[in-house]
Image 1: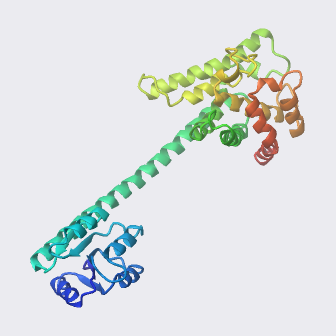
Image 2: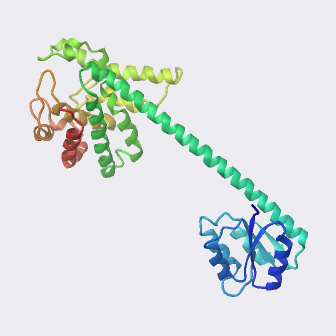
Image 3: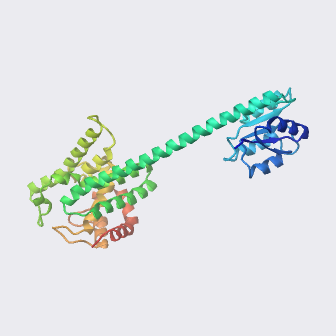
Length: 362
């Protein structure tokens, strides 16, 4: 298919001359004014435009400005048609984005050469853009595949620990939903504490909070009565073990080098039992020294644990769990939580109930 060239000139002689020079090799469409050119460009997409500068009404600069403001037309090469001594208009056109110019009176070989060269450049540019677009799409697809694989591995690791604890995959799925819910609202209210771009990693890694439980004996995990002091020390160690397992995993993935990819996962695993008032474990850190990722997952984990049956307790209703978190009982106190995270839970607790009810099988 021949390249399509739009020639715009209010002088019919010039229009005829340019058409005669190019019509043997290209499809030619013509316009006798800027207004007609803009009308044609509403439905036509030429491969190149030869554009007279001086025309009554909308001149060549006006047509050029219109094209640059239309995404479909912005990259079409424009060659301005100027007078022999019109350096000012030539400079203005080039500054607006014109690719070249031809001077009157026309020299056929120069017109043909410039048109041919700029059409070849356009084909090269279009081919390059197509290749870049194709490669970008391939990379996006590959990235999506890697992200899906990454999430599948994380969920698999989480299920490994949770199945050991006789907890279903529904629990870790709900933890992700609670975490995203709280994180998104917290980021809206306090972007200085939780930047929006951090939400994905916190959500993605939240199911790994109890990874270290793979090292806790079944006799302790499934005990229906109170744990002894020694048993509780072993249970508490799952936070440290989870962090160490993730560090070793990260080191393996990075060929022995320290990597930052699993930093958020390590923070969550190690610190989700720390309490804002400093009464938690394993390190007893307090306040904002606890990573924000762990402060969010801590509340999500407590809420779901309260709602779920365990060997040592029955499941609480939503209102019971909500009141325990907001007002406390003999084990859980509101001062255990970041007050800003607690504020978000107070606002969105009914949504947490909806998440629990929509993803439980009991």
